[in-house]
Image 1: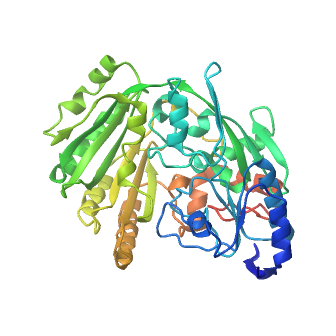
Image 2: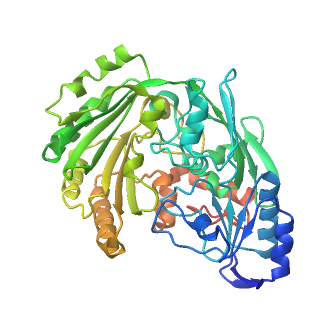
Image 3: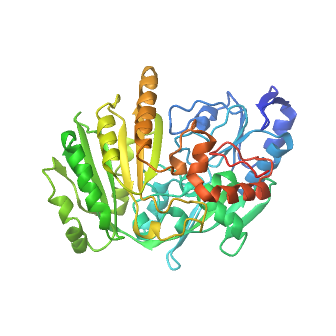
Length: 465
């Protein structure tokens, strides 16, 4: 085979000799893929259809030894490196152009300890797969709103989900990680080992290494009171004002969200989606104001399996569509926010797009802003403009709608954002806004654990000078 042209982490290019690539392959259990190999295009394709990058090499790691070998190989040649777990992140940082992609998608081991209520999970696992294993024992941990999301990426940025108000974010249930850092060493980070690294991994973990194992606390969850009530779009302002009042004082057991989108029958609607994890009788009492508000065109709220709740949004965010996002966090849905959302809902150029608001309170807010890297515990509402389309000719109009809507919202929002919502072109200032006062400490830890910024294909935190 031919030599390989590759990109370095300094922005230069170099040639990897065929013999060097073959020697690298000989040290792995998994495969090393080059352009043209079977499986190469599948491996570089991720959830967001906007992402079309071509790594020089893809290392399909089969285990921890493969990860360590790959990090050492990349460091030797100063290769640009990216990491793929589930490949669901909108920014597409799983895939680099011209560098080496560390593909963890075949590392899918799950071990559940139902007595200790813990699970150990490898980085290629998707949330639906983890839910399948834990629900066999009536257990779960907080994990996303779409079941095809990767466990690794979601957790390392924070980990919102339907159980967040009751049990906290994914990072609040993270007990330990095994992580290969930039010098190729495997470390365990937990509350008692490498505590400073564990602090950083919970919210900024993409910057500090390749996690090969996650250990989570599980909780008793099986049937929930879940589903949605749907109103016509002409009631959007009224529904959002109701939602503001309704969410002002909710029990921990209830997590909710709002979605403005186009229904399958072709009309634009606004829905309030709920997940209540307590007793069904008490949940029906708590939800009574929602169930008696207005004249909904659809009400699907009922006792359902937790797995059904977890897959409720899957069809709205399928693999392969073109996606472009803007997002912001806030502690209140003031009249300016509501007016901007209603206005831009009416301008939505694609019937596949959505505006969502998720509310997190309770356990997710009872963690100090500096207790771990995730900072914005006081900002309970996550507002997301999610442009979603299929025709590349519509890219410009959809991206413009997203940017303009975000700019309209900015006058009414504090400067805070959930790092997992950041798209690929938002810049250092937005990364700093994601971490607030924690950014300076993260930069110091980056200098300690990754002084050359080896892990830079992410929402990057630069090492302190």
